[in-house]
Image 1 (spheres, rainbow, N blue to C red):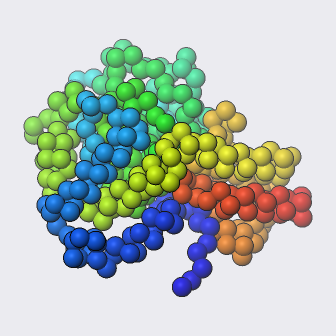
Image 2 (image 1 turned 90 degrees about the horizontal axis):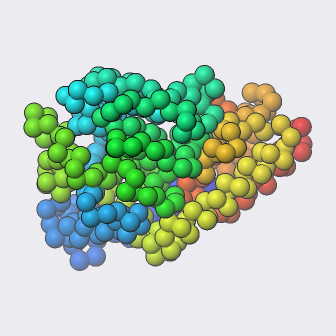
Image 3 (image 1 turned 120 degrees about the horizontal axis):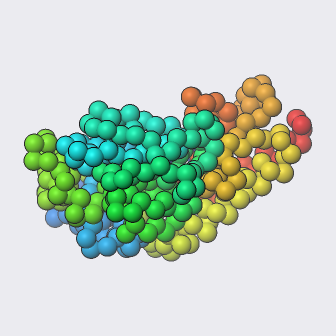
Length: 364
């Protein structure tokens, strides 16, 4: 068996080792099923226990109120950029307000404009997306269909610390890269979605948590699989769901509940891991240049640069030699980036912080 490295990839990303080991055991034959987890019917009692168990875990971890549905969908977050607008903006006669804080919220507003009027309530591009706006900086419409935010921008490494106030307008949140990283006041949101492959499971399934009253906005002329209301009425089983991915989400949420002890404990671990890297950046006296403003720094994605491209190339090569892998920045911005999602072990972050200090000392 090849040695596992510390995988700092932004997604698909690291999974808990205990989860991977359980998947490995069940891959040939799921206990009680007589077949692989990849072979069982989505209509079977076995899978019903898996998907209902996954939903129960999500509700317990996030404290999801009874008037919200939990959906398991396909197509990733990019699919939801369009689905949100199709269901909540199209035909509403109202604009949608988008808080544009980085690459992913920028892509989301572009998709929304295909379905109606979508305008930025704030745009961080002039400052190179280094922060989130203060409440008084938001220019919200008088009566928007909804207000949209991305809680954590993976490329720029900025993360919301306090949710914006939007009045009567439902707040829609792309939480793809920080779902389950900390407790979340779900009742402040009309809809939260998250592709699983960063913090909740493997690629292939997207979680959608949507308030009941918003389901009534889904127009009857939408295709069934693009209609939140119909998907909810069919309990995510309108067509064959990504059964394997849902199964892994169940295992990951089991891990969060039983091994970690819930999201408050997970947040404490994540804050400690992030502090290790930000301390290494701040102590370097400018050798490492972090991207985000200090009060908006992400606990999930830590982007940084060095004085030259040659040093960055050497850093990545030497880090990989120490099994600290996939630290290259996003292709659109370059630099380096450490994605330290829930499943990244503390020891992996400790080793990276230690290497960062050593590399700085030798090359400053």
